[in-house]
Image (cartoon, rainbow, N blue to C red; front, side):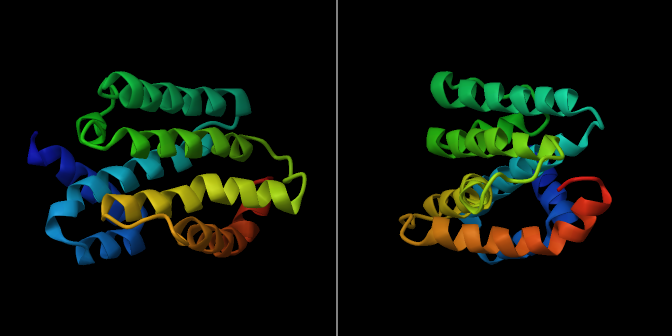
Length: 171
């Protein structure tokens, strides 16, 4: 495996999610490649709903990620993307967690508000919560509390983003 693909993932995370980049740099060196791959994929998935003003086109981008990640998890297929070789090193559970996040992010394609507080918590659990739990598992930790912590952190980030979301016409 080329170090260049992990370097690309690190560059993407440094530019798009500097807080997580700093966290990865504090992690053991042996775990950094997997964490950079996880977080770079998360950035790609989080951006997909914003790639087009047309919700259907944005959903198509998410579906591509869902299919590619599921194929990686079930068949060992490398996602045909520039960060694909790095994703191929992740365990199947991590790829399925990313696919779960992509599925949840369909809500980001549309301007409809969450139907209930429970729907928002489900979204946060599948996105930020799953990301925290997966990162923890890559470091050898159990999920005890990580998903809930991730949901809470995701809620804080969502509240900070609300003015921008409203400015873009998202409820």
